[in-house]
Length: 131
Image (cartoon, rainbow, N blue to C red; front, side, top):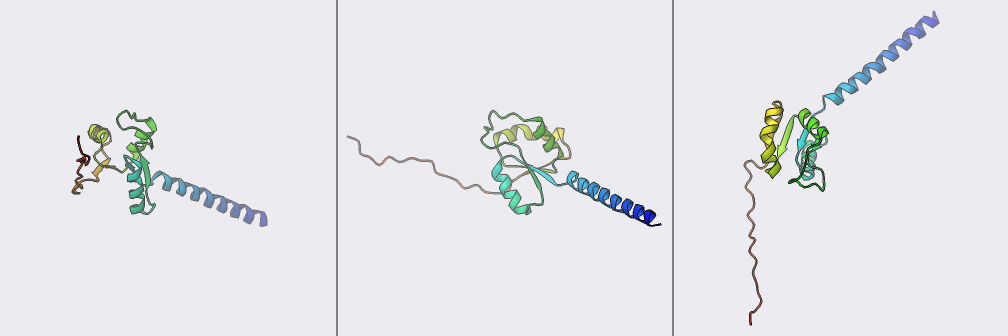
């Protein structure tokens, strides 16, 4: 009788652990993934979301947006993303329409929309005397 109870108890514990592992895997597969273009965007999104999102940075640090080539892993993460936050970079202007066509579930949000940019004055004055 003790062996039967021990066996049933062992099966119950085993079942509990396998269900917990399956639940953890489901949580990881259904995590909220968002994509941003550059690392500074990721910093702000992470602060706002309080670490509740996984963030995919498309343009790696020290990369040049003018000759950047997408890796398949980057495209796969972009496809799995719920939202892609853009900010008006040149490569975004080129690829955003293609992303919308290829990933119809991807919501593209322009972070600059309705934000007035500060104008800078790039004039350079010379204050030396000519002879």
